[in-house]
Image (tube, rainbow, N blue to C red; front, top):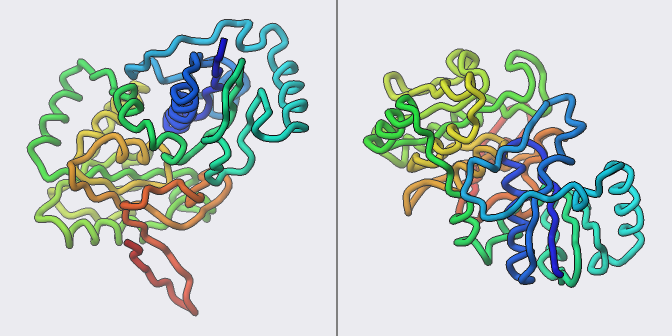
Length: 309
């Protein structure tokens, strides 16, 4: 029996990338897909992330303990990876991602028995040819509470822009992972030039820092915060996807908000530059071609901004 077992891991955005790449691999090979929703989180003691794909219309079952290589799963997976790395890529039965850039070798993989897939696979190129199936699977289960429903109606009535500002490190300190505030200011300026009185729905893990550091047009900003308190990341993603246009952070979370939602002629502004090892942004194949990329360049003694369309 042909089967793909995917190790889902990371935050919600990365979990969606794990799923989408595996779903495509299973579909084109007419193979069953099973989700390992345990192994990728068992040792995540730093971030304490949990499986979040139950909030989507995913028609795939969870892997059994034996499919997760239990008992002694950690050691058995290590051995499987070690053995597979000594084989040609196309012949491996435990496929780990090599590097972070888009790797087109995955598209040619033929599944003829059981294949394990382990990695983040952060590019739509891994599933572009089955895009409609992925969009159908990743319909978000609608939040039923009035606060989110009310905010959704407000988004629908406005020329809405989802503005995601993520602080990986302290906003006030030196950081190799945070985007500069200048990126967000230039992104807002770009949106202001394109649209009449856009309204910004601000999604951030530190909204007070946003108020202090980012100049958003007065009376045209709504800060979305109710779901962070409740741990409902999927509800924020749903609200984000209801917006017409997007300014993303260097974050796979807002990547998916922009990819899943928006108007037919949506504008997505996203950072181009590579930052740090935590963010892993600006990878080959990560940013869809029609998104607007802002590049922050050090030129002589001053910073200059270039818009690449």
